[in-house]
Amino acid sequence: RVADSAAFLHLDLAVENGTGGLAPARPLTWQVEYPGQDPEAQKDKLVWEIQVSERDVRALVPLVQELEILNTAPLTGVPRAVPVKLVAVEAGGGVAELTEPPGCESADKQVLQVSGTPGESRGARGARVDFWSRRLHASLRFTVWAPLLPLRVQLGDTALEQVRGWRLPGGPESAPAEAEEPGEEAERRARGCRPQYQRTALRVLAHFVAHPLDGGRHLAYLPGPDWLLDVTHLVAGRTRVQDPRVA
Image 1 (cartoon, rainbow, N blue to C red):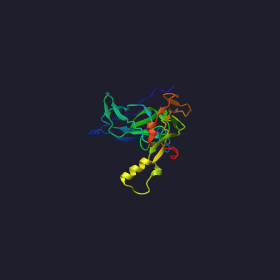
Image 2: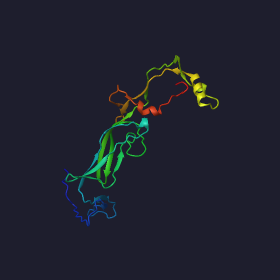
Image 3: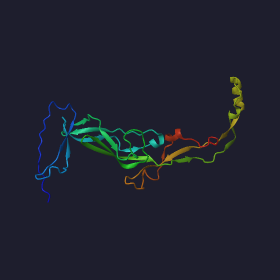
Image 4: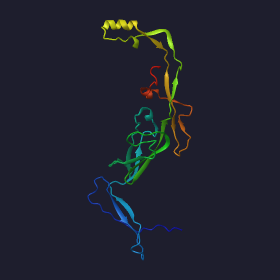
């Protein structure tokens, strides 16, 4: 049976002139020696950190408006930023802003980046971000949905033909060899025509998924595996035809 713990050290600390709102830390190194122990024997040293503050801060609380993120950065190249505010909760229930910059780190940088260049490549449920300020620690867990590549391209009509009997004014074959007067150019454009082809609507669709944190292959789909989200407006500026001579 383990005996009840007993107090063996009592410290009284006196602080002069306050701390100016800061929380300075001082290390205290100590070790335990027993009677009859070899003075030259190696002893384990323990290090304590004593902090002095005018406020009795008990907890660090991160505040965020959303814990579910739709990450469109892989499609647009623009980072999806979610601001987080950290506050300190004092013993009496008071809330105050931190006086020093806190630290933060993402547990999985492939899912979430806390700063810098975006490098997220996948989504996940329960992605953890840790925050700390001196001895206080806190964390948040996010659900991140990321597009599943490759994207799907949907065409209204996959066979486009020339519209017979319908031609449009102008065309590369009617380009002038030398500069013309404005009146002559208008007359030339009226005589020159180019073929008109059928058009079709194009949509770009994507699944948004979250990977399990345990490394498994079972994906969670937003809002379900039978749903595809229309991302045409996000990728329209970066969409190109492989052969512009054809379409």
